[in-house]
Image (cartoon, rainbow, N blue to C red; front, top):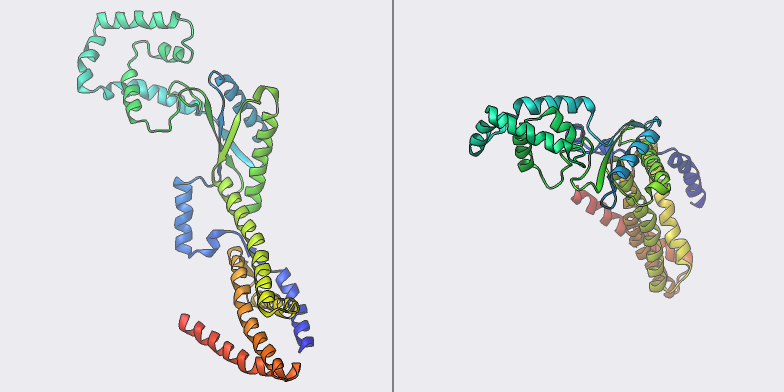
Length: 361
C-alpha cells in the first residue's frame, strides 16, 4: 500500500508542477458576462489606466507642473507606457476655445438678457473694452491674459457661469489647461499603459515602473515637498493579487498549524502530526495531480479553498484514528485496530460523505 501510494505521488508531482494557474478573472466568468464586464471597464472603468494625485502646499503650482513634465519625460520612453497626460491636448483646447466663443450667447439666462443687450450696444462695447484693457494692464492676471485677448468683450463669461453651476465636487481649475485643482495644490496625472490590466505580470511591471519614477523624482530637492497617491486599474489588479496571495500564504499554514495543535491536544499523541496531518496533505497533492491529468489549468482563486479541504480531510482522519486508538485500548493489536477503524468507521464516513455530496448536487 505504501509503495502504491509513493508511486502515485511521484506521478502526481510532475503534473502538479506543470499545472497552469489562471490569473485572469474573465476566464472564470461565462462568455457573455465576461464580454459585458470588458465593455463596462472599457467605457466607464479605469482599466489599462493609472492615476496619480500629486499634492503640495499652496503657492507651489509651478512645482506641480514641473513634476508632471519630468514624470512625462521619464515614462513615455518606456515600452510599457502608451501616454502620460496632466493637461488637455492643445487641439482640444483650440476647438473648445472657438466653440465657447461662438455658442456662449446660448447660455444667457432670461435674467441676464438685459445685461447682454446693454453689452452689445456701442456704449457697452466701449466700456467692456476699456475694462478689459485695465485688467490686462494689471499685474498678476496670469492665465486670464490669454482669455481676455481672445475674448475682449468677455462673452464667454455666460458660458463659464453655466459650467460653474454644473460642476461637481471634484473639478479642475477652469482657467488652466492642466488638471489642476482650483486652489492649485493638486495635480492629476493620467497614465495609459500598453499591457492589458488582466496581464498580471504586465500590470505589476507597470506599477513598479510608475512608483520607481515617482520616487526617483520626489527624491530630488525640487520635489521633496510633494506627496503622491495612486489608483486605477493597474493598482486595483496588483492590490487584489497581493491580498489573495497574502491570504493564501497566511491562511493555509495557519489552518494546518491550528488543526495539528487541536488534534495533538485532543488525542494526547505527538505522533498524530505524522500519521494524521501528513496523509491529508499528501492526499491534496494526489487530488491536484488527478485534476492536472484531466484539465491543464486551475483558477488561482480555487487555491483559497485549500484551508477548507485540510479541515474536511482532518475530520475523516480524526474519526478513524480515534476508533483505532479505542480498539487498541481493548487489547487488539495495532494492525487489527487499523483494519477495524478503516473498514467500519472509514467505510461509514465515506458513505456519509458520498451521500452528502449527492444531496448537495
